[in-house]
Length: 309
Image (cartoon, rainbow, N blue to C red; front, side, top):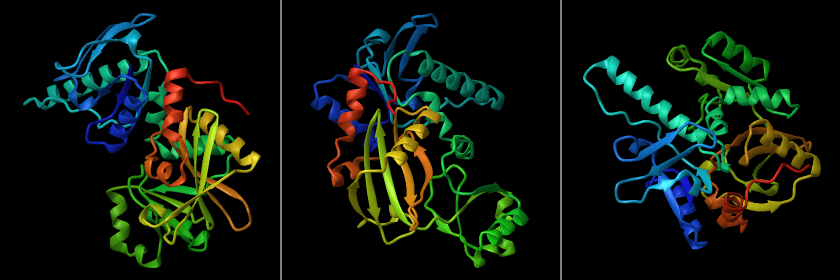
């Protein structure tokens, strides 16, 4: 039995579930918003931890010992029942969140990816610091809500700066002089922003699955290739030293599987942007022919090997 942390309206969750069924595997899906109103979880926090998981009343109870692996795709967080008392509502929310977080840490089996590494992805500034400390080249970055700091950063980098939300969920945009009006800068009081030096060159998406690398150049006419429906994927082999950096990145961020975004500059330097713990890889798999989903399932079925360098 493979547990999928996902939702039935998330296509990648359903896609991976279908691939597992094609290989004769049983699955059950954990939609965190259905707990505790629909989903049942019961266990004693001992070692080894014994308990059961039941996604809904129409599905059977699954013993922890029967869960062979977990594919952690997507979580919509906590959907707490509404209480009239605001304080009680907050207590209920944190109680449910704690129960889910504990369950996802005591369930002892291969996780792709571990709960902690996925949670770390919320804090991209911290991610960048860890990669920087590991000697991995990342763009110079500023996270700020101070207009003066923003303008100074922009001018020091000769106005070659991009911006995006601190946590993500939006496409990359090139910062321009017209973005620095007093009205636009006032919005920093509502939300901080992440600024980075603009890195020219060729986009590369590299999927590291255990010890296997599936890399491709992405040829696009837009600043952010996600906006280009016609972007071409060209499978490539990364230089040994870049492959080593990809593995170091995965180790630093505690990732078994990751989609790594990087760019090769015209001078041949490789600059890393992030390691995504839950990348949407389906289009890349289909256009490149890489067996990414099958290799993920292999890790869940056969176990996760030590990182090889």
